[in-house]
Length: 398
Image (tube, rainbow, N blue to C red; front, side, top):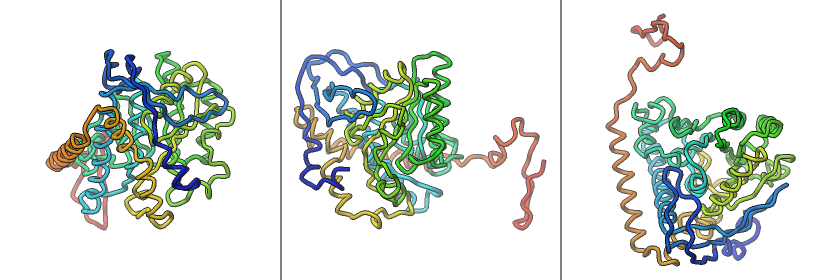
């Protein structure tokens, strides 16, 4: 949180990454894609230092290449355009219910997916749109879910807080603060029980970092040495409360005590990639780890929060200028002659049009059938049917 505590000059050093060209390849690409073939456009980027708790952090030198950087750029742009469009849909009252946006935090899901594959499990809080897209979900599925349509990822029954993609082991956004943490430990237990060599990513925010159930999950995961990566996405505000006002210790990567931990610059997708790749190998051998991703959200906590009553607009714009995750990758692409700035701008405009087209396609999707009101309540349905009712006497007849 250097911008908030260390002054503008200090923060402006955050993204002065050092790059070196070399002939080796990136170790990982996106989880839906095979590892890239050897290429002459590979580079080494030196990221901000990691901080370790009861462990020795990995190297700061991260290998990447043109294709991976372009993929990261396009994926983060698509995530951001999706979040901005979702905000507009809610303001137009076309989508209802809750809405928690993650624009500004795109480097976390993108970096995570660069280090994992879809056989690894993932469970998230209610700020789950970008995580869903990172897990291979489509923009159309996301918007259909927001609009309550049957083509949504949860068939229009879950809404914003309950994105889901079982075929890629994404077990959803969870609407109750911290509830996903013990569930994530359970997913890790399943991986260990099957001895399948995969891990469970359990993501939560700094607002959930003082929940008792989180520490119960830490304890059980440590006792059984479960391959669980607990990830605190620290955007520095739990709803409207700054971390320093809610937590005696805001060094969340140390809060597992006997569970090792690591601080990662969560605004840099390459740093996230390096940290998560290290964490995956670590938990497979040693049991759980706690990662703190130092990140920042540009919108308020939810659709009802303007996000400017407990922080200044200067703070938000300062973080955006100094640490924006998309601009960081844009700079790497331009400085290494992988892309022209004008071409990246054109691609951004094209992605915006694609998102708009996906929204229109989602609007054409049908609403779920009325029978879905009582599906998934009883296992066999028990022959339930809806009869005509009066407002004063609502009743489902069995």
